[in-house]
Length: 122
Length: 115
Image 1 (cartoon, one colour):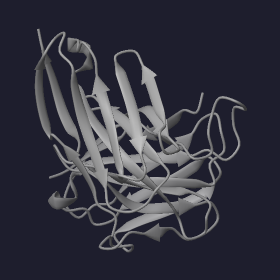
Image 2: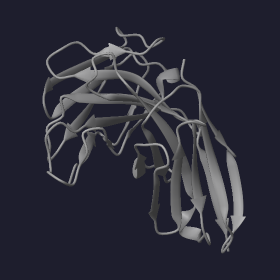
Image 3: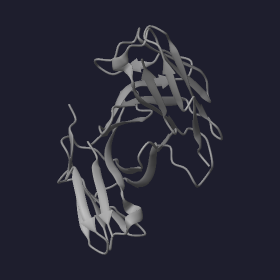
Image 4: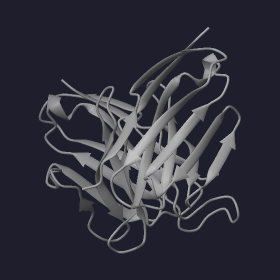
């Protein structure tokens, strides 16, 4: 249980275009989802915390107008990279924090990670 | 600002040997996580350590937490090739609303187990 999916798994786009990445919790409801970015051979850096029905909280240094986050339902959050540039090429990973779910088998304070989306901007 | 330091960053070991990965962090926390990441893949949760003195074991991996020393260790016993991966520790800090733990990751340890 506690499965998180991401779509697409990889995307190649031209510089200046926008790309939308979806993050879904498949078998549980997540009032909070997190978006991370990972550059090659580096660690994960938290970009923003996405709360259902409210504005996302961005980490310092992350441009909110460039990385648009929408958390429209308890199972879906989207990250849109607007006017993408080559320096935005990265591995984007979402995670979902369990609120209600599989009793006795999941923990409120555990984040379940999606499989990631590899973005390449040409 | 919370800092999480892992060492070593690179570890090459022979099958059958034992080794320990260390994770130090700078601010008091009661949540410490260990994850495994295979190349091109996302994170797999290994352990969640919730209290001082916590010890958890799964197969050849054992994790412990000393909150007073702000130190967690991931011990590998009799390594096998399948354990080759990057291992991350992450420290959880409760957000301002008190509803969720925000994770700060270490830089990761790239483990290579050689036959």
